[in-house]
Image (tube, rainbow, N blue to C red; front, top):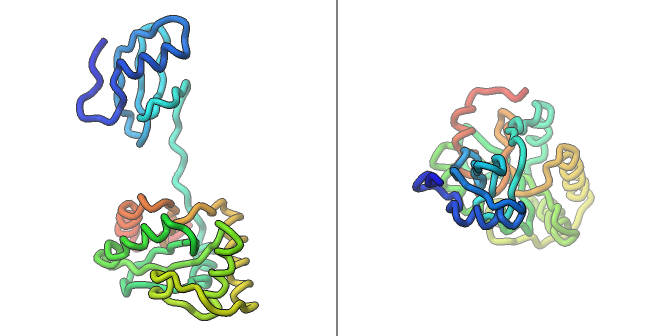
Length: 219
């Protein structure tokens, strides 16, 4: 059996063999285990049991092809809607990124701590509240809109205030539009060119996309 490539995050061949032997009656002869350029997955080459993909935690074997899905994008009409729905802004950059957050989203707060990375690259952040997690989060978002909260209120978790009709309509409209596009897992980042990325681990990629996408128009 040949060795797996050094320095990668793939499980070792002996570990993979143990996993495969629990699935197939015939003992596997592993020839190679190596990364495929997709985070979290490696390719497994065997002599008698075919080829597979395995996740880096050795929990799943996948038989078949892996296809890269096209990048998610939204159109110019959606970008215009987002611009009208901004809850508050942070930074003074000429370029900007929409950040869709939930008041009770811990990952959103973690990504917010990386705001300086955006500012250092001349990127303004346009925050949009989308309280998908609970009714309590929805009430916080409505109160925030009603009192015209700012970045300081958000960072301090200050969502106190009164509920108003304008706030309700704003939040409901935003949530309906985002749901229609399947954008419900916050934090979500959307560039002016319409590129959609999600998760707190996407911050660096969002910044890179924003810098490379300057001057682009959304479809």
